[in-house]
Amino acid sequence: MDNHYRAEPYRIKMVETIKQTTKEKRIEYLKNAGYNPFSLRSEDVYIDLLTDSGTGAMSQEQWAALMRGDEAYAGSQSFYRLEGVVKTITQYRYFIPAHQGRGAEQVVLPQLVKNDGMVFISNIHFDTTRAHVELAGARAIDCVIDACYDVETYHPFKGNFDTEKLAEIIRSKGPENVAGIIMTVTNNSAGGQPISMENMRTVSALAKSYRIPVIIDGARYAENAYFVKQREAGYQNRSILSISQELFQLADIFLMSAKKDGLSNMGGIIAIKDDEALFTKCRTYIVPMEGFPTYGGLSGRDMDALAIGLQEALDEDYLAHRIDQVRYLGDRLKAAGVPVQYPIGGHAVFVDCGTIAPHIPFDQFPAQSVVNELYIEAGVRAVEIGSFLLGRDPDTNENLQNPKEWMRLTIPRRTYTRNHLDVVADAVIAVYQRRTSLKGLCFDYEPPVLRHFTARLKPIE
Ligand code: P61
Picture 1 (cartoon, rainbow, N blue to C red):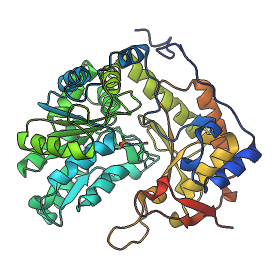
Picture 2: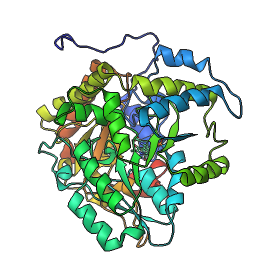
Picture 3: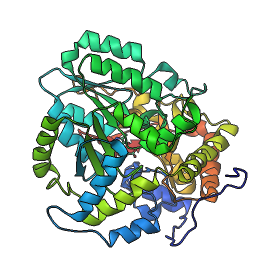
């Protein structure tokens, strides 16, 4: 293919109107939302970069597949079509659908916690995973390489585990107390950064030597495979499917929020390589939690759309455009001096707000302050991935400090054009230029679990 002539590998068949509001209105909307953009109405948002989860555009093939949905309570044909695709991609023996990623987590993670005092170790646990680890009575330990937090410096695989530290943690906790090693692929919380196949191989071998199960939290595994193909020696001539298959062979369990690289609005996946006893437990447990094992909280049409989406997400033209689009936004910000996680990751641009607003302490949430100002500036909704999201220590109840205070500009798949991204870049740059006037925030209401979703805040004058 001639790379020189490259634009969106799709054309638009259906449109959804979005509207700009006035700055005065946005100030009012944000106040009413308790200075938490999760509580905004989406009609009051111009460009929505809150998440790439379930917010992408489906293809005509997916919309057509919806019509084939078999809504039988048990044994739906849609289930068998989805199962076939999941098994082809993972080459695992067992599959159970779930309504979304956290549905899969709530069913599987408690099965791995055998006694008190157990831990899970991850490159970085995403927040719902961390919440389910803690709800299962275990503790979450992050073990990513230090380079991950060196925002300015290029590293091809900032999602990698620090494998020496991992070995040390396993030894100090005792392998019998490690419930599982969770490879978050790509590593969402620090920039959608990929993890190399070599690193996963090392982690997998270490886990195997101690008989610790390896779990892939693979919401964005196809984006990770694309980075492996681009950046890791020996993968240039491989298909994204075969790289993905190699990746899955390094783990025992695959949990997926299929709302990302499943290119679907809803869905989750539990796939188990060969542990029949674990599969039987999960299949029993899914019934009261998610639903009968052949639908797991999904309608038949959701399963059919997902079966197609999973295959489309492995298309290299699609992935090249997707990754390029995110990089375009990141490059524009970097060129203007805005500190961003570099290199730019797969699904989002992560803006380093600790550097932008060093005058705001971590427990007054500097990134949330930038997020709010960006909404006021242009109606762009981003999300905080920092100390606000991280929450409190479950043992001491102290506010935890995230290593970085990120504003995440998350790009939905196949949804926005380059013009939209230019608006976002211009608005972020405008906020950056008035960064010294930003103010910290404190709680008006703080929920006990996953507080950032429903908390109410107020500016500190
Ligand atoms: C996101 F503001 N991610 O990134 P579910 N694992 C991984 C995820 O990225 C993930 C889940 C498991 C979201 C949605 C989201 O505080 C937030 O399908 C690597 O969302 O249940 C989800 O999958 C959970 C946004 C989640 C948030 C929590 O935007």
